[in-house]
Length: 137
Ligand SMILES: CC(C)(COP(=O)(O)OP(=O)(O)OC[C@H]1O[C@@H](n2cnc3c(N)ncnc32)[C@H](O)[C@@H]1OP(=O)(O)O)[C@@H](O)C(=O)NCCC(=O)NCCS
Image 1 (cartoon, rainbow, N blue to C red):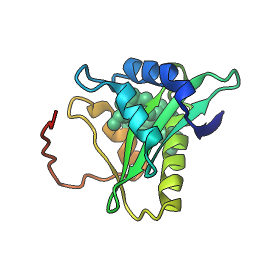
Image 2 (image 1 turned 90 degrees about the horizontal axis):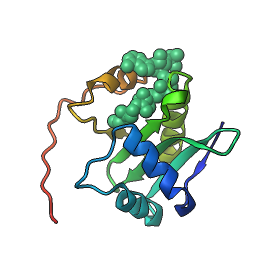
Image 3 (image 1 turned 180 degrees about the horizontal axis):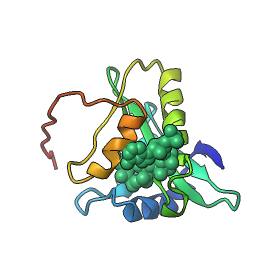
Image 4 (image 1 turned 90 degrees about the vertical axis):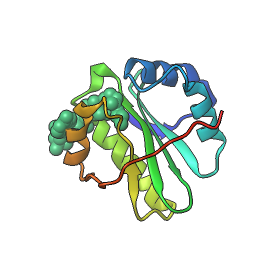
């Protein structure tokens, strides 16, 4: 397994993985999120490729000058439970650390309770905050 930066050549594979992993919503086109992350100097998308060069995992990272964020963590169903999710989170944390991060955080949809145990196992604790959001478009 090789973890490296995604490029626009991986657009189709990445969005397909995210759709299958249940991470996308119709009102939020994943292609736009991916393009913005690739274009930005404060963001990056890391991909895990198997020996056949197939994209089997992703994680998006970014920092806003104060906080560091992780998005779009996904592992192909065929590879889950093999340690790849942990590997991707370690790669994300290393990227953020290299960019001066002191604290990393992430959001989990309230409908995705299944993943909470995974994050807790990796040391991510409840921050006891509530997020408020408003669409600008
Ligand atoms: C979440 C996800 C990335 C985990 O990937 P994975 O490759 O299956 O996880 P790993 O095999 O690396 O597991 C890492 C560790 O977490 C543990 N773990 C995994 N799921 C767990 C759970 N629900 N509760 C507690 N521990 C869990 C594993 O036992 C493993 O422990 P170890 O390293 O100490 O042996 C994967 O399930 C996925 O893609 N889910 C769908 C997309 C998603 O919901 N992403 C998160 C959006 S916020």
